[in-house]
Image (cartoon, rainbow, N blue to C red; front, side, top):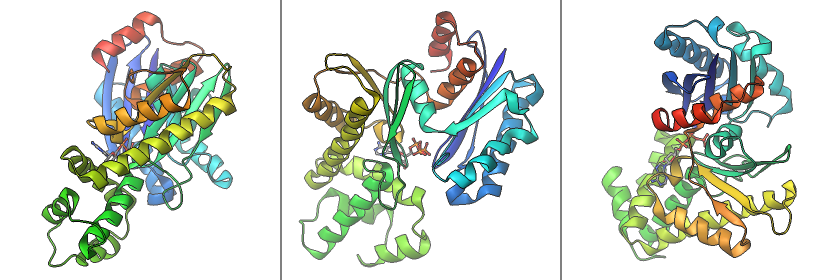
Amino acid sequence: MIFLGVDGGGTKTAFVLITSDGEVLARHESATCYYLGVGMDKARETVLKGIEETCRRAGITPADITYTFLGLPAYGEVSADVARLDAIPQALLSTERYRCDNDMICGWAASLGCQDGINIVSGTGSIAYGELRGRKARCGGWGELFSDEGSAYWIGCQALNLFSRMADGRLTKDILYDLIHEHYPCGNDLDICDLVFNQWQGERGKIASLAQLACEAATGGDKKTREIFFQAAHELALMVDTLRSSLGFAANENIRVSYSGGVFKGNDIILEAFAYELSKLNGNYHISLPEYPPSLGAAIYAAKLNGTPLSGQALKQLTVHGG
Ligand SMILES: Nc1ncnc2c1ncn2[C@@H]1O[C@H](COP(=O)(O)OP(=O)(O)OP(=O)(O)O)[C@@H](O)[C@H]1O
């Protein structure tokens, strides 16, 4: 049997084909399929071309795929769009052989191997998703305009705010100020407005990319920028703790928590702060290292949805070769 996992993100879409033995047949990565950003037609094209290309790399056709799970960003957030999103793969796959849902499931399936627990995603956006004894719940992820706390976009906005305060003297200039000038050379401080509003047109992914500069500044010892990451960790932990209640974990029950998304990559500050914030909220949290990348999580979930969950041996094989 062959399973396809599709993990749609705010900046990219990742595809992976695996066998029921845990062999990775092919991978592919393409542009974002965030339909609220790029439009439904572009999102459809990205998904369909991505499936075809991944199959081509594996030397198979879409008809050879046993089951597919597609995690699409913003799926389920506009009720009127759900049927149109569900219909996207029909051009290549028959309806009984795939399921679409929100991409938050990919992170959860990947990080916790589809076991009970809560996963927090902090990529371009942020969201928490968990399952417990068949119950499913999400928290956060209401979009970048007024939510997505702790995400790269949110961190990018906070970094721009710090830059403005440092530039006009409300705060002492620090590493972040210099780093932004270094990466985006501009004549004077106010040119940052031209960059963000006119050149970037407020583009979500561009603003989110500033989170990497913020990480560099924080790691270098910029105190105010470090505080952004502490605040982000607090917000992300709050989302997890809210799910603990909504999923109905018992008072003394161990709670497995994992994490996914670019903000956690190469960023010890946020990971340590997140663990600290969780420990303050409840002593029963156990943070597990994410087991697989989200695209593999989608493929593992596809096998589960097909009623043929991967065996322990196959999962181990994936850890060695696909993780
Ligand atoms: N060390 C870092 N510290 C902070 N942010 C980082 C770091 N490395 C990468 N990022 C940010 O992570 C984001 C990308 O994360 P990821 O690849 O998980 O996004 P995505 O899957 O496209 O988005 P999403 O899952 O939210 O839809 C980028 O915005 C990038 O700036």
